[in-house]
Amino acid sequence: MTDTESVETRSDRPSGHRTTNNSKTDLRRIGAHPDHWYPVALSRDVRTGRAFAATFAGERIALYRGRSGTVHALEDRCAHRQVPLSMGVVEGETLRCCYHAWAYRGDGRISQIPYLSKGDGRPPRGVRGYPVHEAYGLVFVFPGAPERAAGTPLPALPTFGSARYRTMTYSRTVRCHYSFMHENLLDMNHQFLHRGVVGRLRPELLEHRADARSVEARYLFTHAGGKRNRGAGILAGEGLTGRGSSDVMTIRTEYPYQTLDLVPQGAERPAFRLWAAYVPRDAEQRICHTYGLLMIEKPRVPGVLQLAWPLIRRFTERVFAEDRMAVEAEQRAWDEQGGDRNHEVFPLILDVREVLRGNGVPLGAAGGRAAAPVCGGPAAACHRHGEPGTPAG
Image (cartoon, rainbow, N blue to C red; front, side, top):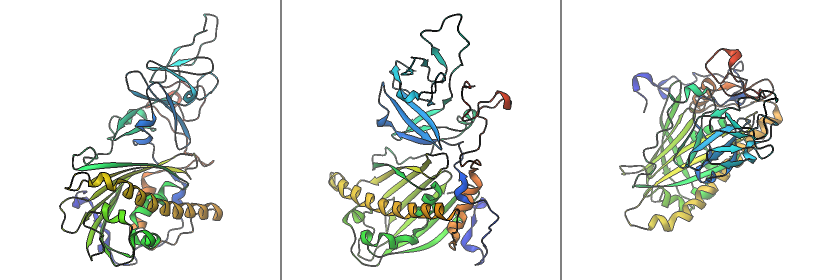
């Protein structure tokens, strides 16, 4: 929780304190800020001795795992003929282009051009190398200014790997701007959408807080009847059982990530914790890839969670499918209408829009992220995204 001295309790403000400001930049035209760690692949998909194609906001990234087990991330183009390096061959700790066999080190520098002779022209130094880190079964890259990577922490997930919890991992593409995903999870008033899965749930917003980088909401959930999927009850432990129980759900957007904790009535720990990241794939950022880690508390009876795992997976996949249907419909409406015609009235969502707008970066005139230097030196010496043939700094 953020220090209460620096956090404003929005529910204490007079009603009607917000009005629609049409002069603000459309949030769907705000890109994800690159100066953060973003997952771009599951660790298990980047196998030893193989290359893997990933993307961030239209930037193609070649991942490869060397003989030592270390994962490297390079701009996905050979500096020679622009052939994707993700099509290449891994040799030890280097990646060799499949076309003319130019070899690259993990930092993007060219280590060998097999046929280069003294009379040939001077070759480029290489391509951009990205800071990369593996954690939580995911491969994270830092697509922003590389000198900022060391001072930018990875998300802290103390529950991951705990003996008390088991983790279910999700990796799904959703055809919408990442902001729709933040809004969807924070606004629990959409439970009508899931009525066929969870029955009748009554969410009550207890409080919400916001600052420049985060928004947090606490809901009280009460099951008010109706047929409920078995996986929902198992996932929530003693909560959401249909016996009049209540549960407290805390959802937080801490830019650029999102978390959700559910604590059943009378419990000391969350029955489950969700961490999610929504990573834009295309330059226009109308498609994102969702990475989710659902950490589920193990029951006291050994083996119960193992038996229930397929039911939980089926339940969560169905809920996600319904959410995806809704947010993709929102994106289609935005595309068809040429902009955001939302008339939002929920203060919580107005707050998270301000956080996403204030921490993101405007998309370029052509729809992509505006070109920005990726080194800390003079502008002329910096490599700009999309500038062909420029060596890494």
